[in-house]
Length: 97
Image (tube, rainbow, N blue to C red; front, side):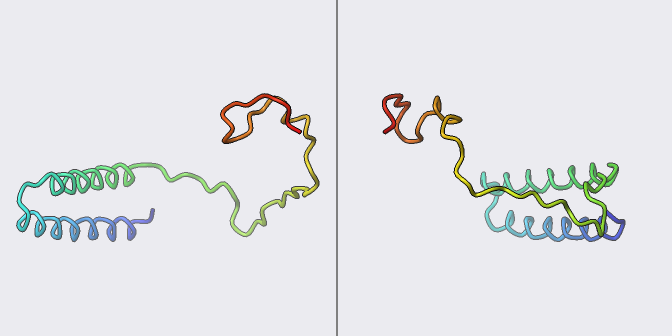
């Protein structure tokens, strides 16, 4: 993330902190409020870790068209599924005809 993105993220987390503080004032130390506070703390930790992390390289080169894979719509060989269970039948292995 660029530096401006982190500034925006930190600003958003601070706004969220103010909102959660208002909720805490209204609802006290309810379990839901404690979870919100915990989530907020987790956001701050994750944002700090991301700020010091190395960005992942993009898997595709910008401007490069991904390779198209053609999937045939012809029926598959039923022998591939001869030992598979039919979904919803609870492992029935009898005659499939």
